[in-house]
Length: 244
Ligand code: SF4
Picture 1 (cartoon, protein in one colour):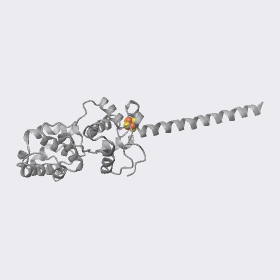
Picture 2 (picture 1 turned 90 degrees about the vertical axis):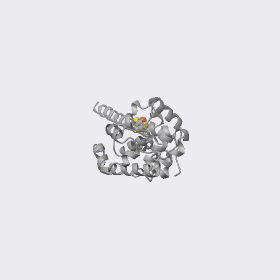
Picture 3 (picture 1 turned 45 degrees about the vertical axis):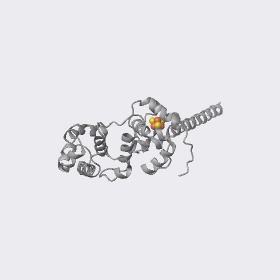
Picture 4 (picture 1 turned 90 degrees about the horizontal axis):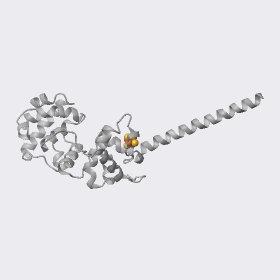
């Protein structure tokens, strides 16, 4: 898609976000590649906080793909019933563990083609795994990344995460892509929130299209308010003059 604006300031934006979030990384708790994969599958349409509440017991019972593969969706369900969509997620986790155990020697694969064969793993999850575990320049676009990049103006008219991803990987330096994912998520979670973004305390407001639009809107409102006031004053003076 032709861009009508320069992908300017991307490095300044990333540097400012790095200052704000110096330890940016996933907020999901895990200690092995298998645990991260399980946590990311569980995090679809669910908060990291909620996932972190169920994974300690889940990982104690299923420390690896083999133990989970030898279990059943029903047993897995008991450990994850408080996350969203526990029925389908327990089936997906069991199917994924089985495939990892039978086809990948219990290891999490590093390539997208293999990852997206795993039940419950789509492009976004595959990108998270590739970037977090293998530091590949794969950008996972979740709801925060999608919203934040559209507001700033880093994406233009992206209709879905795939379109946003395609636009973002063109402008974010390759070496920054794994970290950019976490920075945008944290920025979206804590500053550029869906409702009432905290623009006044935002370190990247000077680079943000949304912020500039808001300022212009305010200025034009103020100036039309000023014009109205001037007109009222002129009319008042004219009335007073005619009475004299
Ligand atoms: S200025 Fe506001 S809209 Fe723009 S990135 Fe910052 S918080 Fe988000």
